[in-house]
Image (cartoon, rainbow, N blue to C red; front, side, top):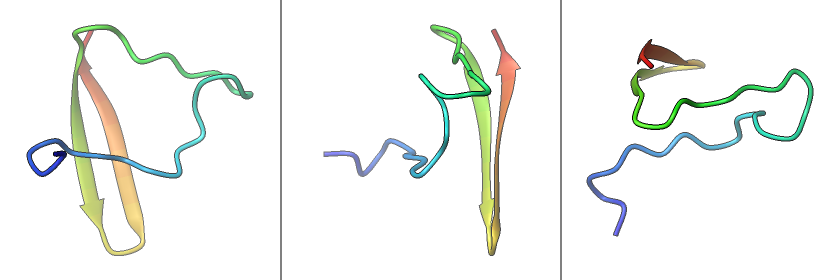
Length: 44
């Protein structure tokens, strides 16, 4: 079902402080490796 979709889990966003909003139809870069992961909004 989600085999072709990247999934980022255990991320603090939404209804907590600080609040983070993902833009609709935006593009992101997801980098995962070892003990560190990053999500960068590249286009909004």
